[in-house]
Structure formats: C-alpha cells, structure tokens
Length: 165
Image (cartoon, rainbow, N blue to C red; front, side, top):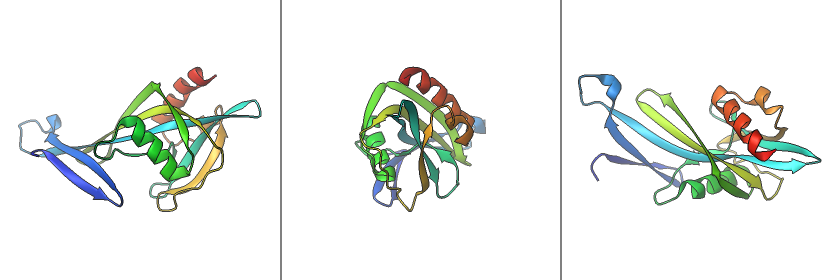
C-alpha cells in the first residue's frame, strides 16, 4: 500500500496519506501528511432555546465541537456518530445535508481536514471522555461565539444557526 501509513492511536485506526507537498517547490521528496476527522455541531431545543454542545479539549484547552479521526472502512457519518458518543456519551441523529469542512495545519508537515455535520441530540446528559475532554457544556447558540476558541468554528455555528432556527 504505497503512499499510505497506518497510525495506531489507542483503540482507533486512522489512515494518513503521504503526498508531496506543493509548497516545497523543487520536489525535494518531502511528504505532507494528510489527516481526516469528522464531528458535528450537536444541538438541542431546551426551554424554547437552541443550545449546542461544546467540548474543551484536554491537550490544547480550546473549546470546539466533538470530533475525531476516521477509522479504516468507516464513513464520515459513522465517524461523527462514534466520536460524539465516545467523547460525550450522547447519541445523535446526524443531518448529512449540512456538511462543512475546515482545513488547517495542527503541526509542521501535517494538513488536517475536519468534516462537520449537524446532529440532533437524543439525550442531554453527557459524560466526558477523561483522556481527551476536560469539560463539556450546553451553550445557547447565540452565546457560543464568545465561548468557541477559533474563528472557523464561529463561522460554522453561524451557518448552522440558519438551518436549525
């Protein structure tokens, strides 16, 4: 399987493809690693308000949405459902008609794409996955902008808000 490296991370298997980086110019043979994760903006309607579920990540301390690496043979929707359940203990119904992507570089030589869906929570009680999630909270969607750590996430919430409302 030339060009594909398999990384073992705890109980998950992620496919990371190595491809020449166009930014290197003269084809010096260096490789850019590409990672893919999937997650969702999980929401509920509570006492007449729309609230979204935000998670605070242990390693970086940033507030975002539940997400995680795609396992071998898994669809994007399956990944999102599994990761939300693993990180929060909440089962969801995914709306795959809402699909937004964010691309960034988490470290030198790595490009990561994250696919976000909308997801309606089936339950409201959460249990954080202690090795990855420091905190979880339901936040009124209008207040989420002030809690989220990154502009990309704020933009996705704005788009999701028009669909949910």
